Length: 444
Image (cartoon, rainbow, N blue to C red):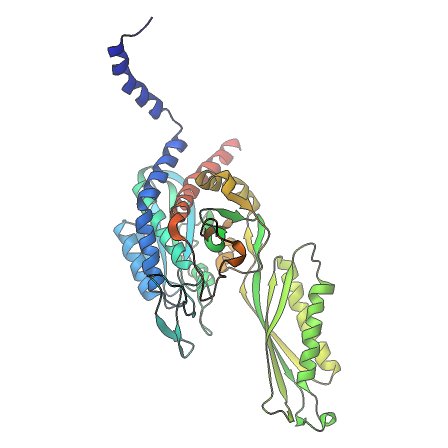
């Protein structure tokens, strides 16, 4: 039987409505998130550029926190301020049952003078450890904050269909608190950000200046290194420079220790298991060329991708320093301060959530990479719940990766035209994690 032309035109809208209503819920939701993120992108860029022009140092993010909190309160979220000094925990309770997911962005800038010629260049100066210094978002934290503000807005608008609860962490002092202050993720955790309600999984992103904008890179398992700072205080015996036999030269002792420390990496560490880096960055001793001083101080950093190897390296440094000093008639005292743990991406969580990133950016734009010897205090959240930390690209499309300005430098630059991809990723993670957990529980 054939329908009349007029009948077909009447039935066409009904047919289209039927097809649309029967599309998978995930596809409908993805389209909605895509549309909302695209519409919000100009605002996200505006937020990012405002924050870039008004950076604040670690544990001093007062105005940044006010700016973020005002936006979150306008969205109707439950906003807790003053966490870990200047941090924020905002809670969004969805209209559907589901898990508790935490999304994290860091807020602090660095004591770096910006050289990039952009309209929103930072000219801010602030006090740091007794000195007045220039301040710059030289690591992309302004982008992290803007993307999470955007995700909070979109997820709030979808509250009715949102499964479970989302906790938004706007964290201070990722770069490390000044002096002997507490701060950063360890203090956020200490003050209960992972509890009430208890977080089931936590996600974070870091924009990278040498990864093409809009793309993601990750590694399952150990991803970023732990960071320890060590100090070796060597005590010898002072003497005239013309009579070294009457003293014990701590500088000579120190040079022997520096050389021996490198054998920990080259001869004592199982590098096929994971890399280890030991760097002595400071060697201070003496006041005059003709005086053999009494003391010398070595300071450096340890990077490890395996917790057991990290602890073994600590013990080897202590043993090498003290025994070399003793053999040469001196003494050595070693102190080691752990700044961050190994950033570990839970393998089961990674396997579950990589498809979410692939749907967000396209499968060709999500790549697995090698481990990184840089560190992140995001690692402390992973002590409390399964975590997944991923790199997000900010390099202009077609740029030469080898010429990309490094992080923590005056020339650091990122292309913010694809921040909507990061916003979408945050939103999709919330829905896709809830769906994945439900499927796992349904199979049991």
